[in-house]
Length: 337
Image (cartoon, rainbow, N blue to C red):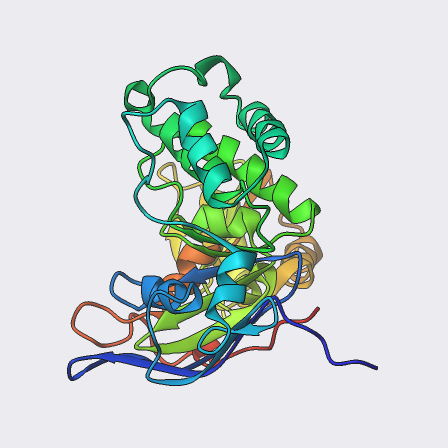
């Protein structure tokens, strides 16, 4: 069986600025036609990774390949295969939307006919056709970000780097960009996404890698990461305080952190959901209450999310981890094709 050709393959990558190490030997792979979200606190090195992969900065050590090409020795081929959308819009505000796209088409050396066809296609994709003849300086923030991404896509990149692409956008504009990202992936584009919006990573990414202290401290599918971190909660509601007290006694000593809190009317219990418990844990809880004839009036389950994963893995401003040593504090797996 031939070896899998990764869209992005990083091995042992290191980078320091002066005497400060930023990347301490990171390994990361991104399968073709997928989204990998790279998370981490401010200053963790996410943008440094993107800058190295886009050939704008040399690494101190290790190797990195994009679309099969080495970023150090095949920079021209890497640049022809990628698109980069940075944290800040790169549109020329004095030009119209169409003129910005025309400029990129000329830089990509698209012919007149092919360039016009591609520009019209992108204007329609990003719902910018009506604003095409308007100076970009009059665009809203969301429209500028859409135009910026459209400019990145003129050359039909195989691999796309999105460095915090939705920063400052309103919820509707963010969702519009999410839809475009999903469409790109369906067309086979591979995406490395850095973002501070963890719900964005949860919705878009096939895999999530967490960068902290210059190292990848977790790398797995979002669902599997969330299964391994504490933070879920079960809220049980009963017909009255007496029933809630019966439930507390029934669960005491057999359920982790049973009855950690009660509702304001005394007719509820809040319980910690065991890490990785899922449906089986919930079934066991309800079976125990049923065996003791304690009916539950209503139940609400709050599952762990990527916020819980992030806080469990990354360092606090003082440099100590925000949670005790946790199974997620080492890579949980490698990306699969």
